[in-house]
Image 1: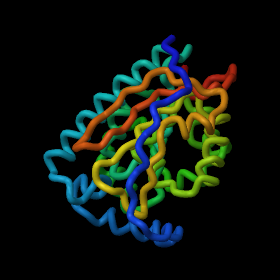
Image 2: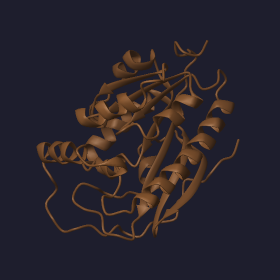
Image 3: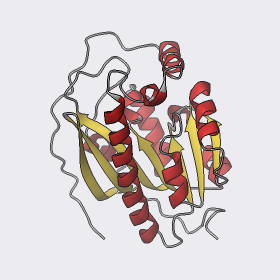
Length: 246
């Protein structure tokens, strides 16, 4: 199994707009307003040309397919369950559903979930749930997928979790609730990110999972931005299987 040293190339500090961090109710309102946009602008930069958004989405789907396939090969019972945190309008959910026995897709915004449910109505192995990332607890994984998830997926989601204490609490949950993490996050941005985003390097997330190791990392370059896509073994040791692994 491929191993990767914990030392990561230090990312340049992300340029951000100088402003006070938004309050929780302001964040919720921002995402409700984004849900009213058209097409991929609901979950991607509104100023980005549609053809670029489509190309980025297509490449992201290919990357997810590759990493999920590797996760399935490594897990002794295959890829039974996936939890997708921040599913948005469901643009990536069909890719996860094609690779896993069951997908629980989460988002905090009702308008996003409504669109996702419609877009994925033909998928009989996907369920949708309104839940914030920072509110996830181990018992939620029991309810959603019958125990620890095989893979929990975040695609450009954790950049919107601004509070370090909330992020650390989330990772304490993930350490006991998922066998693998699949993270896609910006490390460097050519265009300054705004008040609703915060960029962190992969090393930051690894520091929150002391027993973790990187199975595979890929760098993604979109319009001058650099993101990482990483499949991570959380170090969770358990002998039970999820209810979807038979």
